[in-house]
Length: 318
Image (tube, rainbow, N blue to C red; front, side):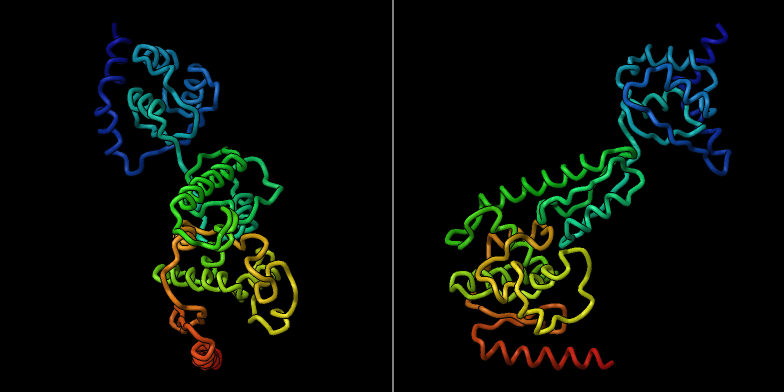
């Protein structure tokens, strides 16, 4: 009878444990790892070994009494030494596992993403083969300790595939893009050309206008990718010799789009590639303020280029 009364207090009166917690300046917590296939007895033993519970049999009894034993989910949990059995079981059955997160910025290359994933000690399994450029959706992803890197990578790729198909389905009419791959390539160029949201559709319009006129795109980021392969920053200005060196990414030399994407574009750039602004612009150049000056003619463009060079030279001399 005495044991039953004690069990009643532990299970049905979590407030008792809260009072104890408030008296302590710091609530001690441990990380409980519930592996897939762990029995209730194994979980009870882990809790007992950590000093969280004193009576393993009592823990198992109440888990079965409340039908929680079959609802416990694998993962990692923060467990306080001041929690009651009721609170512990609620935690384990709620699936409130410890979540880590990783943010993939827009414009990150596949090489950089793989490097980021392989550097996370909380993940398992190594990624040895680079995924296709552009196939990863830039976003924030949550994962638990011990999750497989390849599984997380596939989730990133599935997300990009869904976004790409949805945007392609709702694209503007009359585009010169022939496939999902074309859309992905163009979006990757837009992503690297501007980080300014209000400019994306205008950058897109310039590229589309040039494609329709069969003009070379002459996009600097494509040349840079041909040199670095997306593995590092160029670390210097592009030289005339770079523009005159052939690569399948050099849009100063190849006609149309480069052979493949040059980064993993975000949803906004995918949308801009599929829905360009209605403009007569054929040129753009940096304005020195984080944006670009757009122009319709080569004469106007050359004037804007001279202004940009003055700004750049003044900045480099400071």
